[in-house]
Image (tube, rainbow, N blue to C red; front, side):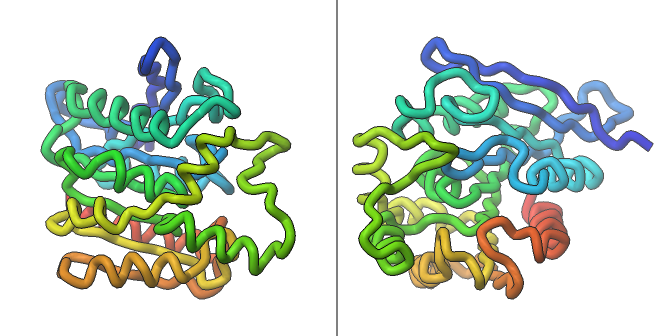
Length: 256
């Protein structure tokens, strides 16, 4: 039985096309508005995710009546733009443009929008949506601090200073400088009233569990937080995929 209506979307930002896929639950009412979750993928990633995890999560959400939008940041996946030209400010702009699109969409309830931020996309979500109406957020191994990431990198890869290479491509100097100085401690305070789910693999060497510890410290004053450790997983979550997807789906079922 088909539980969703999957649609291609094209969203313009600064003259360039952002390509996205929306999953709308099947509805008997043509005027029904659904809660919606926006996916923000990680550095150099795409709207599908490793092992198709974003697609699988979107399907699970549609099955319980929640729409979702998976999109490629400019310079990634199918979207226009060159990977070597993108900046973190442009990633933030892309996320905000997609959020604006969702708020205006006739099949989306603008008061019930959530976000899944993955890796760098977790930090971008915090930086993008602090002044937006976000009802719930889930973070999968999110970056907390560029300084901490660089310290871990220097331990894991001593003497290797070629940061942020993906598929033979490297980010530009402005991107790298901004990334290495990122710290979302102040911005996360804007989400104190927003339910936050944090999932992190204990075997993650790309964004180590130390980043989770910072998020937990920064969320001490927020009672609506849940932190889950995935014992068998690294940064790809493959080993605990079902737990990741089930936990995230249940989270949005309760909070949206």
